[in-house]
Amino acid sequence: NNGVFFPKDGLPGPCSFLLSERLRLIIIDTQWFLHAFKKGKNNSKKETEKIFYNQLDSLLTLSDKNNEQVIVAGHHPLLTNGNHAKPKKISRFIVHYIPPFQLVGLAGIYRLLSQDIDHKKYKSMRKNLIAIFNHHTNIHYVSGHEHNIQLFKDKNVKYLVSGSGSKTSNFRQKKLFTPFFEEDKKLGFIQLKTSTDNAITTIVIDESGNSVEINNY
Image (cartoon, rainbow, N blue to C red):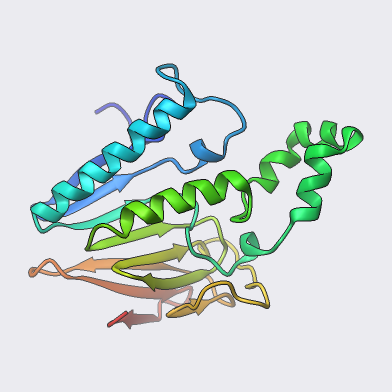
């Protein structure tokens, strides 16, 4: 009734919705953590982060208690072998610390460089989210950002990257993480299908409509 964009008010969330009796969707704004300036009007950025992580952990604890499957949706992947996993430390140092180039950074380059997983803000967000996820079960973390399809499993958490709906991009040559499945040559997307016994099946669908069911990962 009040719009379809979540979270609201410039805050990172988490926003929680029960899609069925034992299937919960949690939406988070990962860009909030990478943003150069404070977003939202309530508390300081540090205090807002603390509240966010506490609420996320509480929601996942509740889901464990109720034996729910959980889909956590955020834009940025926590595991990736795509373009945003390529090292860009030299470029980032120049833009951040050399005066003539700092103006270029203010013009928008800073935001571009903050989108890579080795950026300090990205690393902090990634570390905190993974630490919380590892204390819980039945979690699928779904993301985009990269223009390819990647599936990973780490401990009890499944990490999905579904970003090739409009274009594709190659993986980095030296992979950071071991994927269960990956595709960077075809347009496509990932579908999550639930069953009556509350299990979730991962299905990869390409631009031609061909589908591959991914099990046991």
